[in-house]
Image: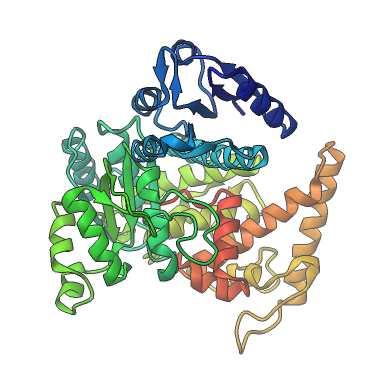
Length: 495
């Protein structure tokens, strides 16, 4: 982690913050004026910048403006005297993370800086995932048309509406539009409006002030603020509640918004890309989506084809996902036979690219040999029924298995896991554990537990065609739990 930079002409303030932050386990670098800070930016970059607002030779507002232009991802906390709160408000409107009013409580200052560090690290992780994500793959004519559209929109700031079935890769297209746009140096922030409870969605989008509602103990920046200078991707926009559609329309119309409980308008410089799997014209006709918002969003529309319309892309996508799954699990990449690949190319894939990726994760864990054969595919994909006592558990069997060999029913009429399949599955885990321990591997329990969870979740997502809420119900866990585990296990970067 990079150090915290503190800039203040008051040596006592620098000393107190440096000592407190060191005690909290954070590295600190101190400056007495903005000129030295700007010179230091030429060589390195802080995790968080904490700056006084009035100093000889410059001020914190000018420093904030410079950093927002050159390093928009760095959170800036402004320190100000109580008599200069108007400047603090101006700083927040200019993109500051928050402000500290002098004299401040040292513990609260460290807590605020810690929150800024956490957000900075989250944004860095998201950026790494974005940079590490592959370019869109596809040789099919329908995908080539999408690529041409992305190229034509490369230097445009226009609002884009991406349509397509669930799992077709809408977020990947949004990231590509951002990556090749003039805003590429700014943040890319994504939010699935269908995954956030409606009573929390307004705060997620626009942020809230301290005390705005029960539980709002601190000020929080919303996704619009986090995306300042970059791109905000609103996934599943068709599920947005009508009252929030009104607020979104106002932002798109005049470029201003208010935090929940706030009284100062915040100027927005964000490009909005929206996506949906629903027919918005139909929802407008049914009164479930505002017609004026639809026209605001529907400036340029990109339709992503389902995977069944681009079967020639299944082979390169399968090889790519098998390679990536192996890299995530630190194992040798699996190969797939021509016969197994032919079976996949004939499958409809109702869950589209996401379903294919989940399948490849499952195969990486469960296929017994380095080359995947037809018999290794889940039963719902195989052209013939599985042979009795086959050593590979099906996706449904994997989803029903519990740690420790315990078996849970997958539904009201589900039968227990057969003894032969269950025993072979357990013996396979034992063999893998022994091999890892003999190789000198540490933390074997954690590694195998992660593999098990990844396989179970991948199987559930494949069974439900990528529908997370239904997958969570099948697994007997909560919606928030499956979302958290998908993120922790690195399974959430498919569009």
